[in-house]
Image (cartoon, rainbow, N blue to C red; front, side, top):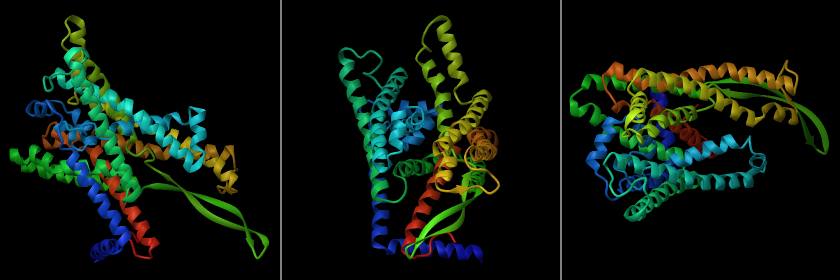
Length: 442
């Protein structure tokens, strides 16, 4: 009965959302941008051998991560083959540089104008990152015989095609970033996350068909679905989990021209998984780098060629060493990124300025030390969770008998999908509550 009541409330909330003209306009605008994104993802670059590209994806599991962020566009090598990954990398770099560079730290404290300026800098940093990534992809495909006429040597007849394709890929990435920002401004949810979400969901039917249905492996399909549902449940629980730190405030209010002291109480929600999916992206980038560099030297002779082949095989995503290293890196990056973000928030100083304090803890340095101890303890739960999420594709390979296809909708993809759905539902909830409607959550 309770489940039926929750379902009816969800249906009623959706009807209420579409019944409001402005909210309906936001939802339809978001859907329109997603349709445009999927059209762009199917506009191919010229001169690509699609059959050879398909074979490369079957042999190289690590390309699945890049294809994940491009929404399947890399598998077709379209103008949006890089997706929004360069922008995500640029955003992460800016977040790490803000506490290090004083001028950026000053901009972050200037309110809306400072954030807009930082956003412009992030866009400019995205361009060279997209150029480097696009050129690297062209070189790799050229070495694999998938793309001809481009390569490392930018001379003669190779110069114009290579430059034209790199600029086209940069334009495709920036166009997707613009579409994402349109969703953020005029639609519902975070635009960049919505685009990644749309790409992952659109690739699900093809992944299931390639991995299970064409092979008649229904038992493995059932096991994979069960594992995916269990993983989604755990992701929702950990994503929503937080530790409440009670806070008392001594507020000064004015009533009828007189100043009065009035106390208040609230809490600080410290999330178990404050880092989100960022540690997974960091760790994946580190694990991809050695194999990518080694691929440039696999055709060399002597010791260089042998070492390059050894490194490429070691980081090909098909052995225990790779997945163990990946899990340990995710664990380390979870603590590193959480500490960086937590130090930027400077909660102890903010509480002191606002006249707040934690009961039993002296303000200032003692509050900072207490909050650091708490965040360190609860981050262990989030870090271990992310590490298990990272290695779950390897466990799925063992349990279901599938190979590289599992990575195409990996645990990272599920983490993104669940996070985007929860965030979008919260925004819809807020929009409905503002208009005095009952939302999704009671």
